[in-house]
Figure 1 (cartoon, rainbow, N blue to C red):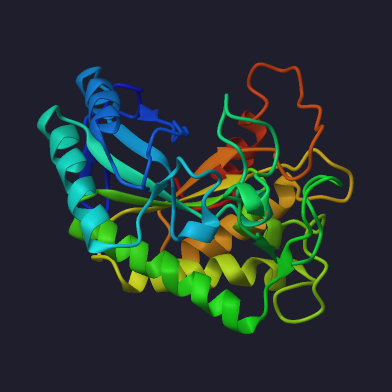
Figure 2: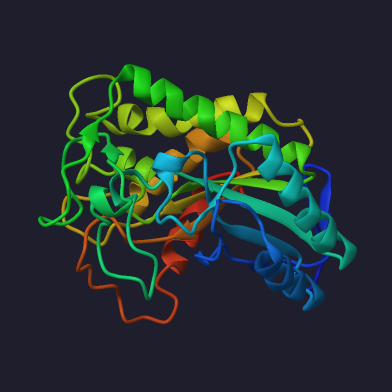
Length: 293
């Protein structure tokens, strides 16, 4: 295997094994794709990457990191996304989209416009999380999600995935990393629930597994499904590489094709390793012990 060799995932052929990672650009005014996104992502497809993963795109307004995030919750937004997917395809790349919910980190200022949470009276909104623990002491206490709100968010992930498929996006990625909502359920640092969504790793993984199952049921069988995880919290008592291996096996059994390995983000002030490839042990462990990309 070489990095410039093509790869086929569920029938979708990428021209090489280079994927542009999803990176927030904070460049939308109404949650929709605009001229900036078309130019930005088209240029990357021209550059030759096999997969162009569009930035974290919220499944609803409450799940946006900032007011300038992309959002996919309507037919109109799907139609605008379709313009982008066709342009990426025209230059030889596969298009992917990372579906996300920011959880307790939602409603923050975009870069250059302020720091921390936007006050409610200045356009901010209330956040939600598995447990009522703020990301920072100065931030608002998120509302603890009940069974109804959990079911609603799961349904919204599925609806956004369906809209992405209608927009001819090639790949769906579920964002379960960097301290956002799904990661908050996974990590024992942020999940202090005593119901069947908290406690042991199977329960803490339940929210993600249910999202995966609903997303898979709402997209074509031929559509690849990725999950991005923080493979290591780098915090004592947090999520570990060993947990990531266990989770990856569960995800593979439920129709996920690839684990996108990142790390950190669950709490502020994490000191990341100084090694140049500090995420490599995550992907190496998953590749060694799991039958998944």
